[in-house]
Amino acid sequence: MIKLKKILCPVDFSACSTHALSYATDLSIKNKASLYLIHVVETHVNDVRDMLKQIDLLLDDKQIDELRVQLTSLIPDNIQKSITIETIIVKGIPYVEIIKTARDKQMDLIVMGTHGRTGLEHILIGSVAQRVIQKAPCPVFSIRLPEQIFSMP
Ligand code: AMP
Image: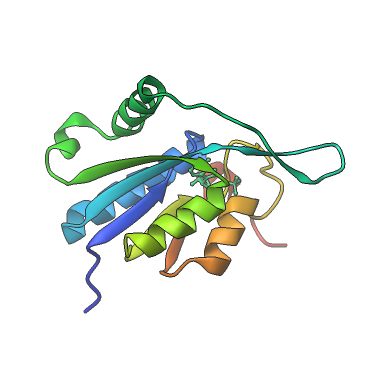
């Protein structure tokens, strides 16, 4: 039987990622798995020539603590007491940091949204989700918002 001990949920605070978090939380409860919430503070932006440009971003301890609190507060208080939750705040390129964390911490499953903050609902799947699905060292459960489900012709 497959046993899930560690579940990683990448959260960018979009509606889709918080919807995915409810699945991750439920799976953690049912499997008695530890839930790891990761938020990546982006340090790379596309410049006008569509190249990746690194931006120097300073993140102090206070900001990191605030982000940890924001992440944890997405989970109802009564559930927080029943599972082990860890928050991970890192700077970098989201898909790189998500995959690196999954590998380093030997995650059993990643639960994430199909879409994020970019609001490109018309595309089938966002670029962070796409890259994580392609390169993750463990299975990826991708969750779509109910209003993003469209019928096939
Ligand atoms: P995207 O591919 O950008 O549309 O986002 C798809 C999903 O990737 C989101 O629903 C989140 O689960 C995750 N994600 C995107 N950006 C970040 C980020 N900066 N930190 C953590 N998770 C992220």
